[in-house]
Image (cartoon, rainbow, N blue to C red; front, top):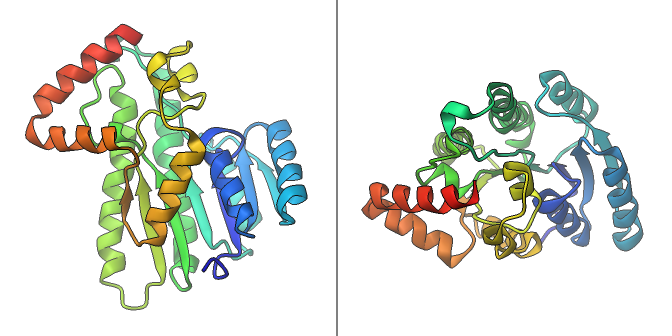
Length: 260
């Protein structure tokens, strides 16, 4: 079933969802290219994957909010046949828009939007010719109203909108062999909330484990889904959102105001 996938590139692979994707792929016998800023964490993970699953694991240290580093990753791997690309690297900040830090938000836009766009655009031309896949990690924040994290929600909305448009193109391309799926998680037990608020939050501590999330997402990908939204609670939020964005927006605002 997974023999057609031989090499996966995962961004933000040093922890959380990215790390879980890397472990999942290695467990399937897929070689991995691990990309993140933390060289020490990447090397430790690579060593573990080689030992535990007998796969090849390549490490590329890069800050993908920097376009030059994005191009460095591509130039180091463009001659290799990347069969699976997971654009996972990203971060958020929870704060009222008018007091949010401009530099931080621009950095977020560069990482959450620009890097995802560039890597998707750069790898797609070669991937579309063979059985391959791209998973772009968005968020339910890109579907629901996002008060107190408006910029983050907007970046994830961009990813969903881009993927939706591309999928219409792929569907009408008779020569296409590429699958593109958007992954829109809700709360996940990673260090995301710590970075977003500089503190731990009960909501995210009660969230889905990244290993569980990846298992659901991978199964959805194999089923040919164009978007994966793991978790019944998240699906309920999306359902309610279709009924009343005003109700959902006020609920989210009240919830995050307590966190901030």
